[in-house]
Image (cartoon, rainbow, N blue to C red; front, side):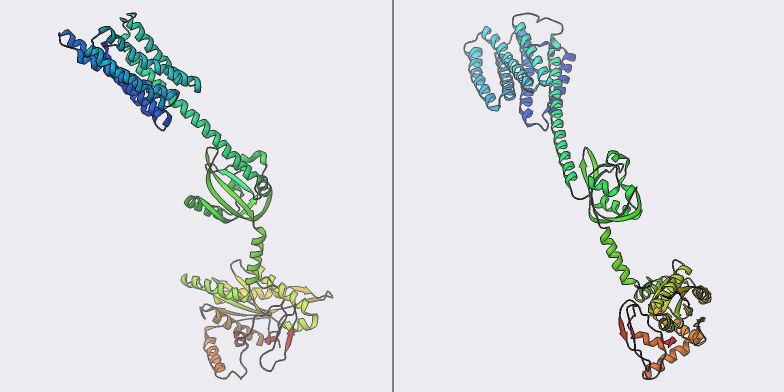
Length: 579
């Protein structure tokens, strides 16, 4: 730029270096992650630095000239640096306007001409006018090319950064021409021109980069909008209920028609709903949340949900994953209604563990569950009792009023037992007209009192035969406890032994199996095992008998000398104690 005053005043020199540093930073910023701008920007920077170094050579040559020394080598170095600067600036400009190949052609042509002209007019045919002309032509060509390149780019892309760069380089080109003709070269502001130019160019680079980022952002936003539109279309057309909710506040931001119908959602007021509000089981939701935190995706997860318009919960199969949607992290959830399947599963489960006539637990479930609870009660050193109940004279009820009335008796007996006992007590139908009860935390003495209250409650019930005849019934009860055994089979056998005693002592009463009865009971069992052909206690028959269902047609033979009986679908087995 022909301002050697920059090198003669320290503060101006430092100011210029600082502006060059800012320009260097802007080059890094603007060229980062931009293939199209990388080469032009750095070629411009090299051109500007080289031109600045040429000014330094001029300043050094002026000092040498004042000392009367030869300055030809300095002039040669100055012109060579100006030539190199012009080449790089021309390459940068043509790269911006066309492509790098045009820049190489420009650089090659200018380089060949310069390499011939510089040594020719400096060493071979020294000519001060020609040298002064080259001092103008080289930088003028460089800055003019950059101004044209920036201007053309600004016209193509309508970027203010390119326009600012074009104006700055055009201003320098004008100043060079004016200076060559001696116009305005002595102004006080002239030493600050390089620093101002570098700062303006740096701002131009940063504006170009900012504009490029805006363009990329617009493209990204367009892609996101297209992506969101595809998601929304897929959700709308999906045959499954789908909901998208924000992870931050759990608000529902998108739901298709199937989801709105399933959850009772008003599609016009989506954001007033939270996904968590539809969970009927808090533990179930917590488990789903934990799995999502660990895995980011959950498939085929069963959840129990409810709706704002209904108090009846229902089951869904949920698949959920965390994803980006509309500049936010969201939870994408798809659902399938499996209430019918769960109902079938529950029905099959109940059929496996419950008696079909009375809906009480069956014998198998009772033995397994009581065995498990006994282990826990033993660890807590807590007592427990077992009651065995049997309907008195049940065969007479069947024979007199029919099996349908007999079934009514069993159903009412079971219902009364459930109402009279605690929620944590276990009541089961053991077979025929026999029922068994487990009382956790109850010792033998208290178990006897519970059994007696239960006996009285049952004796107060009435069922009606088909001809509206009232039918009363009673039960006999046997009690055993943890004082006797911690084995469920032994407890049932000893409770049945006490029941047998209650039958012998007149029925409609309660008998307790005491520790004093244990020795005789064991001895009796040992005698029976020695000779199984002898008459023996009925409790041991149960070890080989099938469990009797009142709804299944089962034909059985009684053991010993008793008569054969056939049970229809609604017929109850006749206990040997009533025979």
